Length: 121
Image (cartoon, rainbow, N blue to C red):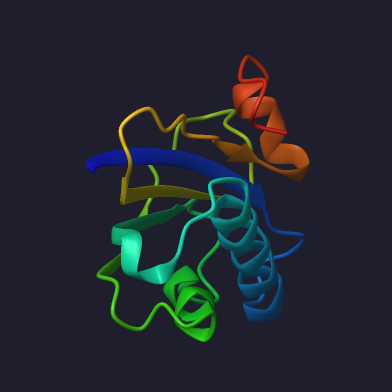
């Protein structure tokens, strides 16, 4: 077993709690399904939000998915002019067998952030 890192992002429809939680739920579920991850294999998760999203913590969605024993951290992205709005990003550290190939996940409008990754969509 070794530690891997996954990246992903999703866009929220609006700056309200339900939109942030729904986008985060979709992102975390998709990452876990595509990579066949179980909560016990997760080391930590870092969420970031663009400055225009401040109505809820993405970690709330992760806790609702049963990730109550995984260290979670939320932070704000650097406000770069012209960057894609309403984006939730995630960095997941997890254990997997050697030879595992991480499958990153970029959804909705956030898929434009990493169109170069075949596994991102």
